[in-house]
Length: 177
Image 1 (cartoon, rainbow, N blue to C red):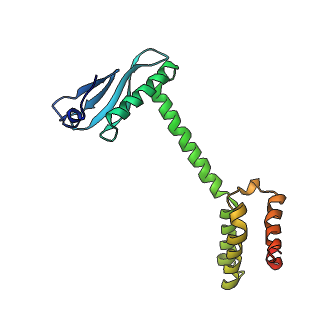
Image 2: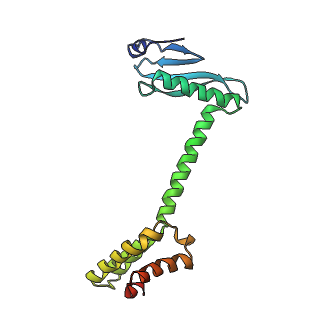
């Protein structure tokens, strides 16, 4: 069944919600508020009870994209996976991965070294300002590009030795110390 984009675009809110079917149990739900939402009817794989899968809002999602999303959801149903639960689990997985990345960055050598530098310079007042700038610049040039992104717990002696050896090889023996 083919429905023109003009018909979808010109669909106006009425006193009751109504649907414009585009085939394969997929339709555009036009709400009384004027909001238009793509939805698909399916039977839950485990209980065989009818359910509705919300694809997204029109016009953010075009008809072609809605059809493709419905096909993808139907593939999941054929595999015995509830598409609504799958989407929720996928969002949770992505959120957990993002949180893990944030934690990894917080534990990176660079973030720990910068915190150490700030504490030593600003809180303990151990260094003169020019010396503090020199130390930070040395870390930024020699250390952070090589091991800055690595979590502190994953660093070993060989990693540190590689950095020190690179500084020695360029002739900056005093900086290597």
